[in-house]
Amino acid sequence: MYLNNYQHLKNKKTYLLIFLFLFSFFIRIPSIFIFGDTSLDNEWKILVNNLTNYGKLYSVLPYFLFKFDNFFVPNVFMPPLYAFYLYCFKFFNFSTELYIQVVLISQAILSSFSVVIFYNLNKFFFSNKISILGTLIFSLFPLHIYACGQISSVTLQSFLIVVFFYFFFKTVKKDNFFNICFLSLTSGLLMLLRGEFIAFFLLTILYITLFSKIKLKNIIMMVLLTIFVISPYLVRNIIFFGWLAVLFLPCDKRELSICSRG
Image (tube, rainbow, N blue to C red; front, top):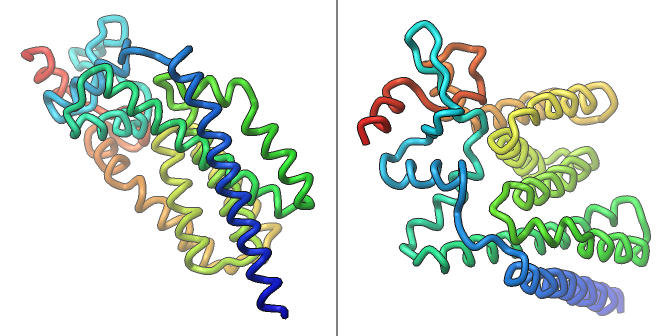
C-alpha cells in the first residue's frame, strides 16, 4: 500500500514537472519568432567571429581599446562563458538565420528548465499549491519570456542562479559530495558569466561557515572545486596580467596584434 502511494505521488510529480517544462517552453516560442533577435550584432558578433577565425577571445572595437605606456590593455571587460556558449553552436555550420534560431531555442529550453528547478526550490519552503502558483508566476514573468529571444546572457544567468540556490539549500540540508559538486560547478560557471559573482560567492561561504552545520572539510572542498572550475581562465589571466586581473581581462597584447594583422 505504501509503495503504491509513493509510486503514485512520484508519477504525479513527474507529470507536473513535464507540464511545467512544456508549458514554459511553448509560451516562449512565439516570443522568439515575434520579438527575437535575427542576427548576431555588436560585441557578441565580434567575439564569436574572433573565436571562430583565430581561436581567441578579444574585441577590436576602437572605443574599447586603450593604450597605456605603449602596452595595449585588453579590451573585453567581461567573463567568457556566454561568448563560448554562442561559439559552441558554430560547430554545426548552420546558416546565419538557423544559427540564431537554434541559439534562441536553446535559451528557451534553458529557461524552461529553470522553471522546473524553481518549482523544486519553492518546495523547500512552501506547500505544493503555493509552489505551483509561484512557479507559474515565475514562468509567465514578461521579461523572463522576452529574454529568451535576445542574444544576451540574461537567460543563462537566470538559469544558473536558480540552479545555484537550489543546490545551496540542498547542501545546507545535506552536505553530501553530489550536492557540493553541483553547487561548486554552478558557482564557478556564474563567476565565468558575471565577475561580480565572486563577491556573492564569498558571502555564501561566510554564511555557511558561520550559520550552517556543513563540515569545514566540505566547505574547503567547495572552495577548491569552484577554483578548479575557473582555474584555466584564472591562471591564464594571472600569467599575463598579474593577480589584479583575476576574471576581467581575457586577452593579451599578442592576441591583439594577431587580430590587427587579420
